[in-house]
Image (cartoon, rainbow, N blue to C red; front, top):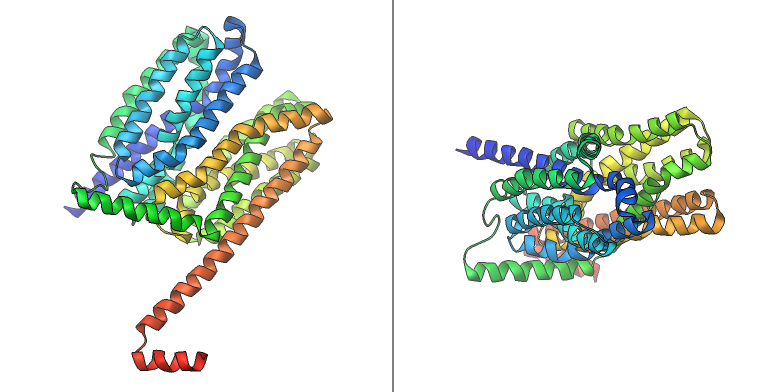
Length: 428
């Protein structure tokens, strides 16, 4: 019986991993491919369409905490299944949009859907459902999800070329609905981690609420919040402006394409390395490597010029750091804080970083407009990425202090009363 339950759990994890691949591919990665076709047929400006995307990212950030709280209360299946249905509905509405206001409504809805279906809510579900093996399962899920752009960018482009952008959206909506909705209903299960007793339900809510309040009083939480916000702000800003940055430097088109093509496989390779080797290494050590690797990649970009070798090296480190960061983001809270109320805590951490994702590309564009050069943007990205590195180090320092205090308290509790009394007298 245990082996059967374990097999079912592994099958559910694989199914959820495939659903992540579809969710990321159908909603997040597909957007950039629709911008130009919408410009040509609907007449919407690139600025307006990207503003709609920013609205979606901002809404996703604001929705992260209430979504996490619902998962803590045991409604993981309802949250993720509802998010999948909403995503498909918004893709259908997008296909019928005939004005820019509708596109903004679509992306506001997709923002809620992303908050309910992408990595963060699933990490919360996995942590609650599999507290003894969530690290391995999260790594597996991100490993599969890393192929989302590889699968869906050519698929979406082929659909647009053959069917037009409106019908392509309908196909993506059908794929999302037919795969993600049944997976989230069947793989998560009814009432996962939720007690049917009202008293137990009230107790769970009280524990989760206290856990959240406790997190807000913990320096580790705030240091991690600064770390993740700074990291994702810089990563998204650089990602959205990397092609025009290299174009400004007169990097040849083949080298630009090669550099961009390396980033995705580097993310997957880094996750594979974590899955096979680094999962046995302390997350604190891996985290310091990741948060240090990102500013190193920015330095390489600063000095690369038009060198293909240096640009490919940048892409390998840049993509690899982000690939591992996704896993670190899903496991570090449990490792240095606690599991109780993880969904709400994770949501609180996601809120500022998701808002930063929405603001960062526009901020980088504004800086470029002021200086008419990407060099100041690169220096700002480097400085903010170093803030992420320093914040992670501070978080680990406070986590170590908390662990030391916990060990001392446990040791004292285990000593005989006479020894504790003698120790207390010596301290006085």
